[in-house]
Length: 316
Image 1 (cartoon, rainbow, N blue to C red):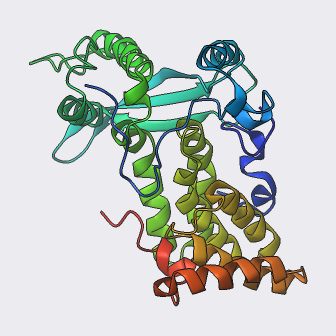
Image 2 (tube, rainbow, N blue to C red):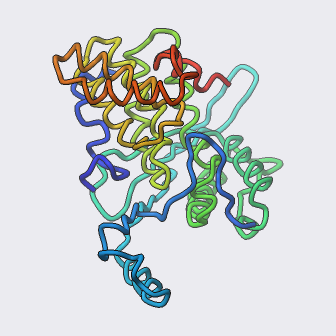
């Protein structure tokens, strides 16, 4: 996929990489950054048949059946590429390297992350609390009483964990769940935002640019989920004196918010973008007008800067 608006896009980083540092039924979510899911594939009905309001129920059903055949939702494959034994002073565990790639097209931003067996076990426990019926047939590799560090056990567990992730991803409500999203992205994002709070902007940016594409691939149904990460990228680029790259990140964030004036990032993003536009010598009047209109409608949002907002993310 080639558009910045589509998951897995090479344009997610876009200009931001120019200055990169070296380095039961599915329930609607209530998370403010995870709005009610849209049909996978971001189908825009208005761009299809002229006016659906004039179609009969049967015609609508036939139309949707036809359109579903053209949908190309994001499909991800999981591979446990390798495993290694970590020996610490008081503990010993196996670290598994997970590679996530998007199918259907060349994926230049495949994600590589590492998780312990205990991380998988915690994921399983949290999913059982939320989706006990949906995952009752999903096999989770149990921990053995002995022999957990033998080559044979580790090799077998790599295959079983790969199948486990694939089975979870095949379940729609689990694929869109906060639990799976946190398992795959939270450690890296928590590290990135921690570096941002510490003023380590180059390191934070590097981690954000590595974690961002996977976060985007996992949330095609809720574009606003990308906004905190993109806001953090803006802050890092701005602090590193790269206003053009910061502005590009802000544009992506605003596109994902669309007209959601009630979103907590909306006004702070606009304020940051107005300042960046002025610094770059660009026309800031449209952004300024949107900001003033938002402030009039929601006066309680005044005074909160984008940086103040981002440093509050992933505190726990």
